[in-house]
Amino acid sequence: MALRIVKIKYTNFKAGYEQSVVLLFFPPLLSANLSASASLRQIAICCQPLRPIAILTFTKLKEFLLRVNVLIANTTPKSGTFMAKVKILAFAGSARKDSCNKKLVKIAMEGAKEAGADVTYLDLNDYPLPLYHGDLEDAEGIPEDAQAIKKLMLEHDGWLIASPEYNSSLSGILKNTIDWVSRSVPNEDYLIAFKGKIASIMSASPGGLGGLRGLAHLRDILENIFMIVLPDQLAISNAKDAFDDQGQLKSKDKETAAKALGAKLVEITAKIKG
Ligand SMILES: Cc1cc2nc3c(=O)[nH]c(=O)nc-3n(C[C@H](O)[C@H](O)[C@H](O)COP(=O)(O)O)c2cc1C
Image 1 (cartoon, rainbow, N blue to C red):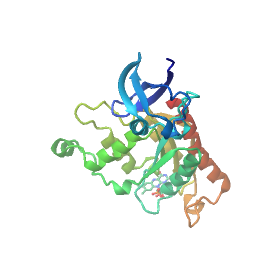
Image 2: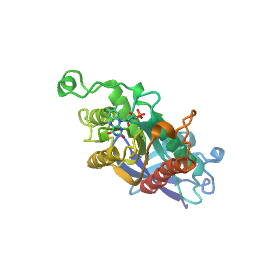
Image 3: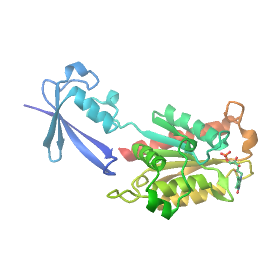
Image 4: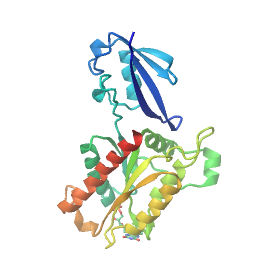
C-alpha cells in the first residue's frame, strides 16, 4: 500500500527552533488536494524517522497547520510542496500620534502585504512601558505590556521597524522596548524573541540625513541580539514635508522604495523559512 509522504518544516515558536514533521496521506487520499477538505479523512503526523505521533482528521490537521503557520490553500500532496506563510510585525520606534516613522512603516507594510505576507501593525503607544530598572523588575517582574509585545514578536517571522533618530541614535522608547523584551522569564531561552528573526529597518526625520545615523546604531544592536538585519534600508530626509495629508509619501520614488523594503523582507524571510 503506497503512502504519499510530505515533509513540512516550521518554526516552533515556543521551543524557539525549527522543526519538521512528515505527513502521511493514506489511500484513497493520495490524489486529494488539501484544500478539498471533503476528500480527506485521515492524516498521520509523524516525527522523523516516521514514528507516528498522531492520526488526525482533516479538521484537526487544518488546525495544526494553521498553528504552525502553514498556508493550506497552497498545499497539495500531489506536488508535495507546502508554502509557509510569512508573518511580519511592523512598528515604529515612536509613540507620537503624528509620527512620521509610523507613516513610513505603514507604507512599507503595504509592500509586505502585496508580497503575500500576513502583516500585523504594532503601535507602541498601546503598550506603555516603564523605563527599564533592575529594581523594578526584581520587585514586580516583567510588565504585562512587555510580555504582550514579546508574544507578538515571537509570533512573527520578520519585523519592519521605522526608527526615529534621537541625538544620532535610536529613540529611547525603541531601546527601552528592546531592553524589556530581552529579559527572560524563568526557563525561557535567552533572547528568544530576537534569535533568528529577520528585520528591515528604515527611518524618517525632518533633518537632512533622514535618521541614517540612528539606523547604524539600531542595526548594530539588533545584530548583537542575534537578529538578521537586511542590508537594504531607507532614510527619508525632510520628513515634515515628505508626507501628504493622508500619510502617503509625496515622492513616488520614495514610496516605491518603502514598499520594496517590505516586499524584500517577505521574499528573504520566505527563503530563510524554507
Ligand atoms: C530628543 C530628540 C532628539 C532628536 N535628535 C535628532 C537627531 O539626532 N537627528 C535627527 O535627524 N532628528 C532628531 N530629532 C528630531 C526627530 O527626528 C523628529 O522629532 C522626528 O519627527 C521624530 O520621529 P517621529 O515623527 O516618528 O516621532 C530629535 C528629536 C528629539 C525629540
